[in-house]
Image (cartoon, rainbow, N blue to C red; front, side, top):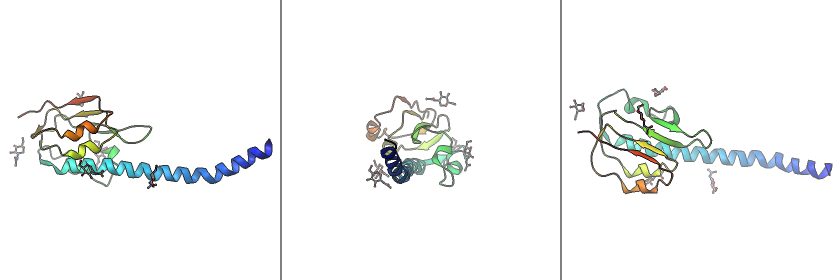
Amino acid sequence: MERSLSILQLIALFLLPYLFSHNLANTTTDLKTDESSLLAFKSHITNDSSHTTLGKNWTTKTSVCNWIGVTCGSRNYRVIALNISYMFLEGTIPPHIGNLSFLVSLDITGNRFHGDLPEELAHLRRLRVLNFVLIK
Ligand SMILES: *[C@@H]1O[C@H](CO)[C@@H](O)[C@H](O)[C@H]1NC(C)=O
Ligand SMILES: *[C@@H]1O[C@H](CO)[C@@H](O)[C@H](O)[C@H]1NC(C)=O
Ligand SMILES: *[C@@H]1O[C@H](CO)[C@@H](O)[C@H](O)[C@H]1NC(C)=O
Ligand SMILES: *[C@@H]1O[C@H](CO)[C@@H](O)[C@H](O)[C@H]1NC(C)=O
Ligand SMILES: *[C@@H]1O[C@H](CO)[C@@H](O)[C@H](O)[C@H]1NC(C)=O
């Protein structure tokens, strides 16, 4: 009994770091997807009149999870909410938004986006809140 346990423990000792690093690598990869989705979003903003905001803040120098208006989940560390309401941004919403696969809440109210909402939004199966009352 004791022996078989210690063999299991030995296996676990060798396997765990492997599984752990594998998972970590994947988390990073997935957060990179979120990052590139949001950078695409930013590149479609033509007039960031509030200056302060996305232009200077949404950079690869810091994790997406520290960006203004972005909230990450505490467990899986993916972007779960985007709230950029009343930033008076102009531009269009690119299809890349549909790659934020863990997004639950999207609030783009109070901006001057034009064009249609991309149909890729329908890919967001976890999306529960969508506020997009735009201004002129
Ligand atoms: C992420 O996981 C998938 C399978 O779950 C695997 O095929 C892929 O190689 C992993 N990626 C990295 C960077 O480890
Ligand atoms: C950008 O937005 C500001 C504030 O809404 C406006 O005053 C300015 O004319 C806009 N600039 C361009 C190039 O559209
Ligand atoms: C972006 O804004 C957040 C929240 O205000 C702040 O904590 C962070 O330091 C800012 N990052 C940069 C690079 O300005
Ligand atoms: C987004 O942020 C604004 C201002 O902080 C807040 O009033 C609004 O309720 C937020 N939207 C969502 C969906 O949480
Ligand atoms: C995100 O979505 C766009 C358009 O929907 C697609 O072309 C692109 O390859 C995707 N990017 C990633 C990193 O998955």
